[in-house]
Length: 322
Image 1 (tube, helix red, strand yellow):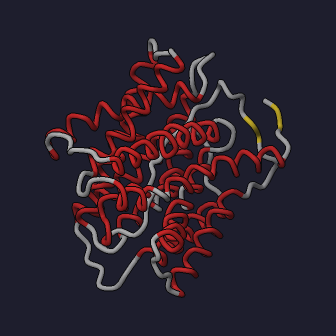
Image 2 (cartoon, helix red, strand yellow):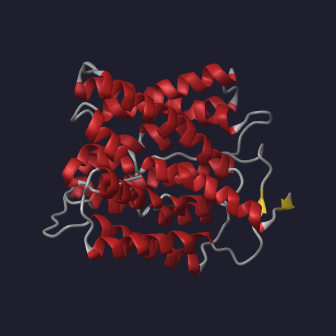
């Protein structure tokens, strides 16, 4: 294990940060291009086709103990995370689901302490609190009413994503297996979990026009296959908790894209929230010592989802992601 230069460490973080920034575009794409009220079908179309394509490209399947591990990671990072996030968005008003998703870095700190023996520093705890507060300023509106089931689903979704992040870091990946193959395993496993649920809850797939096809292609290729590969690559090189804090960039990206592309006005409080969320993200990356780069074959990655997917089904009710 060798110490990486800070420039290399910063470059890895910057490249990994592209993933939640891309995830922030999910809301605009789904509201403008995709069929309405089909969140599970959209989650399925994001995960399963991309996973199968990556399996075909890498031609590597999990073996032995990794069959079970890939299933668990795919369920945590995709199969459980998406439906829980969607349920929270349906039952909670005004971006509350987005705020609950922003708690994921705090969960990651706890899981890392138990599974990786990485005790949370005071700085990271403060960064997590700042990040949640900033996201709240961006997405919350007045007259918020809480639903117990929705709150539980939102917290469970955040915990699922955090557990997947830390557990993939703990398990790493098999020798000779790169992050692209690991991405394919998890997306395929997660998609297979979502498929029967989507069919049961939403019925047969909807008819797709040219806009919907282009939207699903963008989400599948850019927003999922490429984005998750960058995410997994990043988590193999930097601490899992540092990567988890990058997810706070997703609601920031969604708000900026909504302002630029959709003409959505930003209030003074929202602009302040953007700055606070960015400050929490940056504070979560600071380390007291030189960062250490792990060998690429010893660690794995974690998924997104991204909180931006909460916006997919919340429409005007949910204005933030992840």
